[in-house]
Image (cartoon, rainbow, N blue to C red):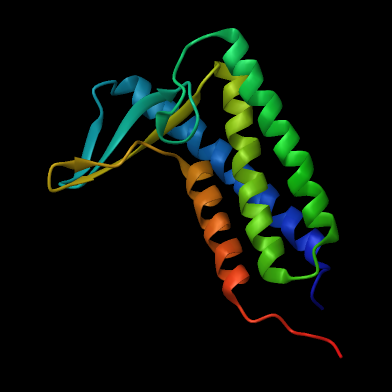
Length: 159
């Protein structure tokens, strides 16, 4: 029997949060032993980057006020997403919100613990570099993509 969408979304959020925190513990330890980074493939490295800003390194000013402000904004957004999830009746939207919520909480934990978000996945090709990111960031991007996909699906109308 399928769980109610909000319960499903919470399970997705919990799974992402646990996977994100485990990956950060593992890779932070690994990168502290290899601070110069690890070349995995010609287009992928493991690195240790501390993002004090927001997505893609925007707003990198370093101050306690900025860090606590970002935490407060993230918590407010999490409350809004939680309300949306609670009212949700679609499994796809619940999964998307769960991905976003789990990823956001993972990054808030980093910001609270370290004052910055730990990023370690580094992709590059043809002289171009994508900003380093982590599992939480990936979950947020996939979640937003699923919300966009849902927004383009034809809506069922009731007579």
